[in-house]
Amino acid sequence: MAPTAAPPPVRPSGTLYDREVEIETPEHVAIGYELADLGSRFSALLLDGLILVGGALLVGWGIPSLVRRLGGLPEWAEGSGVAILLALGFLWFWGYFVYFEGMRDGQTPGKRAMGIRAVADGGYPLTVRGAAIRNLIRLVDLQPAGTWLLGGLVMMVNSSTKRLGDLAAGSIVVRERTGAVLPEEAAVEGAVTGVPRLNDREWAALSQYVARRATLAPDARTRIAWQMQHHLDDRFRDHPRRQVTSPDEFLLLVHQEESSRRASAGLTGRAGTGQATVLVRRQKGAWERYRALLELAQKSGLDRLPEGEVSRFAALYREVAADLARARTYGGSPELLYALERSVGAGHNLLYRPTGGSWRALYGWLAVGFPALFRKRWKPIAVATACFYLPALVAYAAARAEPDAVRDFVGPVMMERVENAAKREAQGVGYAEEEYGKIPLMPQSAVSLIANNVGVTFYTFAGGVLAGLGSLFILLTNGVLLGSVAGLFANHGVSMHLWGFVLPHGVLELTAICIAGGAGLWLGSAMILPGRQTRRHALVTRSREAVSLLAGAGMLLVFAGFVEGFVSPSPDIPREAKLAMAALNGVLMLTYLLFSGRGAAGRRAADRAAER
Figure 1 (spheres, helix red, strand yellow):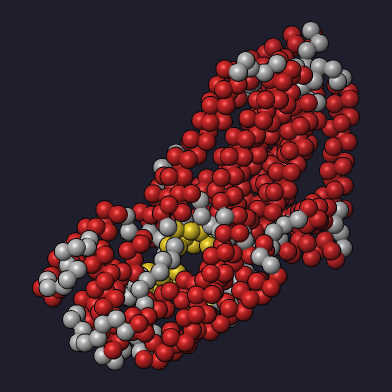
Figure 2: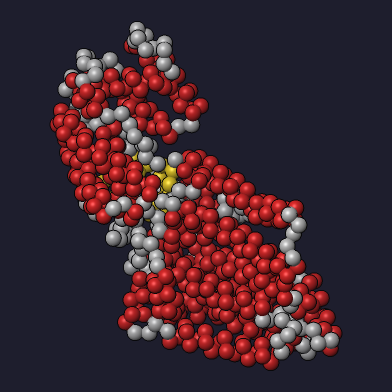
């Protein structure tokens, strides 16, 4: 079930939250979410960063050290062992946030520790695609130079505390909901009766503390509780539990007793009305049964419950959602509404969680969806291709005319390769054969090249959020670099020394970079040419298509990486065979992109790229 298209408004709340977003469930019941503050988000990011560093140290230093202590690997397996570690490091770095936010209900370990989570606009659970968009754009948010100044600035000026990644993914970060003592429940139990001892202002402050105490750090909770207890000492100095409990426990007890007094006195407002008290009395059993099933479903997953339990959970969810609407109508206390919203929100996230993918769905996307989307969005891809190859041609001409003008741009390492190319050709040694052409090192080089190239496409895509300027910069600079290098090799009469290595994998790799650049430009076009949509809505919609294009480019890069690791540098494969493979790769790729997935099925698959 798809959420509403427009993002929810932010509304101030003078009760339990400082800032809140309100969404409406398919049952037409509103649920409020408190926005996470900058401090909580920064602390969560810091914790996640420490975990990332720890994992990187384990993969990059801990495991290799352990292997060496155990005697090391045989020579024939060293390349494969390093390849596995490189793949693990790549997946750890790029997949950490996507996995936890997309598959663990929007919570990384850092967010869980800080009591916050990422959700989609509308309160729905964040999808894997949304998590991928959100965290690829993180590459831009952390600029300049990893300082997070850009992301922090955007968060400060955005009413929903969204960074660029949140704007593109259509997501928000909210505070985890915690329970609160219900005044109506105290009235049902009839614990204390009499005249309330607190005025409305004191009662509001105490209720707010009780509702939010679980989200406070222990030292902050202790400090605030002590200050509040000191303020209330005149009214409760003679209380029998005053000296035998901590300030926090004492305030909880006072809150419960004062709730009961207000309910018994027939006060409305924060204590709730008599109708709300009757609702609690009548429905408390159903709520407890629902909470029990909810906890079980959260631990094991709703899909692992027996069919009968799932039906019972759905029925109880609808009943509790209806009770939330009744509690609002009856004038229930904020604590009652808060507790019911928390229960309904948790059930909503479980029932409307996106269905998991399947191998059949993946095959359908590869065979039909990606090439159909490629053809649907051919214009930004064509612009990106022009922005790559036209500067390459200009740089090639400049290098042919003025070689010294591009020496500094290509760097000393590449200049050494150019100057030694004729000598290597005379010796029968191809480009990079000595570095990557050894059989044991081929798996290592293949994985390393895949990781590097995929990383480049990620940056190309993410730069698109800056109105396409970041994508254009990467396309232009890489095009100029390629053209300059090609011109220098041509000046020395050894062009085929370069192209014999580049073309077998480059046909796929360069096409993938252009597709990623087109995805970035399509993403950035939302800021300049949003059409009939608002810029925010266009950004969310186009980012979903753009990340699907990026995934297809990544698939091409995986194939290109294996070719670059095992074929392009191999001294045992003749150059003619490599060039023939380059031509075959080009024909197969163009056939796939231009003809696969044509027809109504392809058009539907391309349209689904813009859905949740």
